[in-house]
Amino acid sequence: DARVTQTPRDKVTEMGQEVTMRCQPILGHNTVFWYRQTMMQGLELLAYFRNRAPLDDSGMPKDRFSAEMPDATLATLKIQPSEPRDSAVYFCASGTALAPQYFGPGTRLTVL
Amino acid sequence: SQQGEEDPQALSIQEGENATMNCSYKTSINNLQWYRQNSGRGLVHLILIRSNEREKHSGRLRVTLDTSKKSSSLLITASRAADTASYFCATDAGNTGKLIFGQGTTLQVKP
Image 1: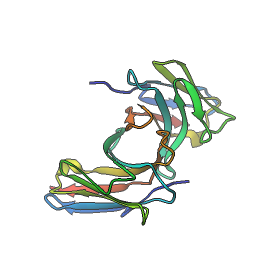
Image 2: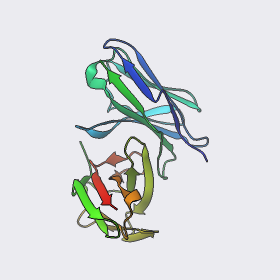
Image 3: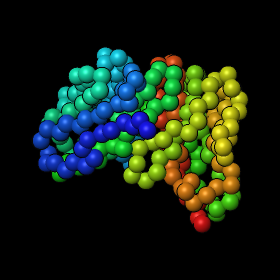
Image 4: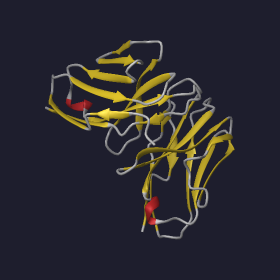
């Protein structure tokens, strides 16, 4: 049963620290999405990639967030430096252009 | 900004009853999708309806789409306690796979 995996599942860190979240998309999926979910803002698209190339990162604060796909099996989302307002659940999802998205279990980030 | 808006924000029903959730959106779409999210989990895809379709069924789920009104509804028949979750509609406007999600409807089904 193919699944999107994310690590870590939970992360507690202090303000100013670097945070790296990792995602392994489903094999064969060529599109990877990063979302952030909070009670106030709901589910927001941060960035997405197709065939490892970034297509849209307009939802991402550029000064502190960065997203990459070093290879087809790994996507990373990095926050440096982290701030308390970054506390949220971060989801990775994968799919193909015209198909549903498959979500990972999320990384719950708490920045103190 | 959110493309889809769900209504109601919260819904509480008894097991066995039907649950209806509505979604409105603002711009033209290629398809609309419904997802479910159980507490503390990722979203799970339920059903996809294309812009040239008016109704679609999957098990106890029935989705309708009215492009003239820019709205969709999700009907869950004979609800079960296990249907308790948040339900989100999401629209794909450009056939890119990029989805814009609504704020969701929280459904509670009481046993």
